[in-house]
Image 1 (cartoon, rainbow, N blue to C red):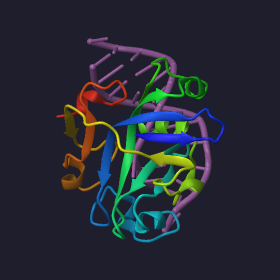
Image 2: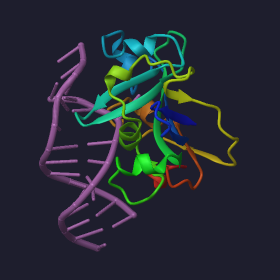
Image 3: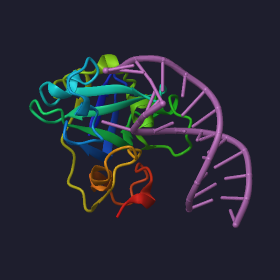
Image 4: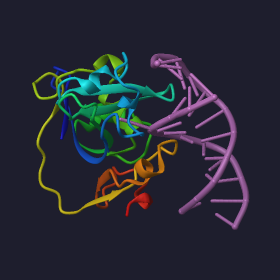
Length: 175
DNA sequence: CGTCAGATGATC
DNA sequence: ATCATCTGACGC
């Protein structure tokens, strides 16, 4: 679960339904492959924090840093909005009420930009990650949009999605 | 259903 | 030059 606490009683709550794993410098699809730079530095920091970057000059993609100092992170690719719909609807152009299928949409609703990198996600305030309920079926498949990676990394099934959730992008590319 | 172009800007 | 995307426009 992902909670946005704007401090005005209009919090947004969303269920994470699609993710991708980026394993570290040895993963040719992972940003940390270039080593420590101003942009990738957050990935080498402590886990449980955010890594946000601007993608294609338009979309801010939201990641959760996972490894200790290893440059690993999880990209949040899809969510279902379960609370604060009124707040969200204004921000979205899509028609499906609570489905945020695609990392750019998730980032837009979260209202993040790269200045959110390093934000602590396990304490109240701003954006908080909470434990959700167990899920019936999780499907997996290759990651999306990483064609320039080595074939081995490109084909690795490191994308995970809740079966039949409307918040999952590219459902046809799951195994 | 599929593919494709264009928008758009930080990065190294 | 590259790029972890989205949308709308096509064609089948």
